[in-house]
Image 1 (tube, rainbow, N blue to C red):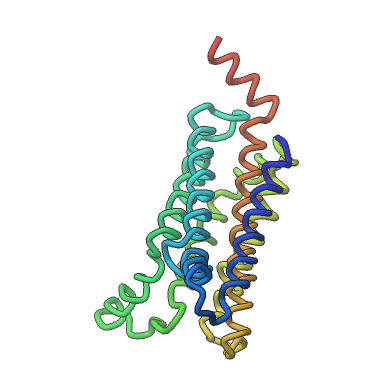
Image 2 (image 1 turned 135 degrees about the vertical axis):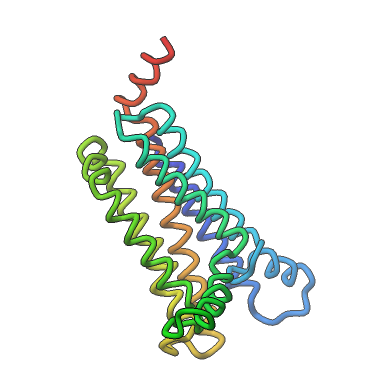
Length: 227
């Protein structure tokens, strides 16, 4: 798998950060205002969010493709599980589903669980718990994947760590749960770093699954099935 694909994605994400930083300053220039609107890293439905959602959807789609082709003789159930997780993350990135978790938890708290935390960032514990369950369930698959595609697995792990760093750790500070970034300038810098790490993590994961799809053993299996 050509690394130029990965470099192109990372350069695109750096461009998003540069445009966001360059156009965020107050100005009366209509062009800069339009650019800021479309490249606002903290906004919904903007170009960076769409790009990130497409990356995650592509990752999910490739996992489904690998399940269909029985790539590297990996268990299809786990491949489908991974595909479903990334498709959900893509939809979440597009539709901001996690923002509705707080509303659901408030209903649950008022009814049967008064101990629940329903403050800002209430979705984070829910997503972390769900992610931990998926990681625990898929541990045997991860070990098998590491044995059969170590090169790709390294990109998956590194990408996952970067994605979690941006989506969870920096997100916590952006919600001011610990009031680390209180000034508008520091908050904007935090948003830029957070979103870049999320997108870069997704790029590394996408590159990793593309490496699995182009793995010599998988390619031979596909040719044999077609023959």
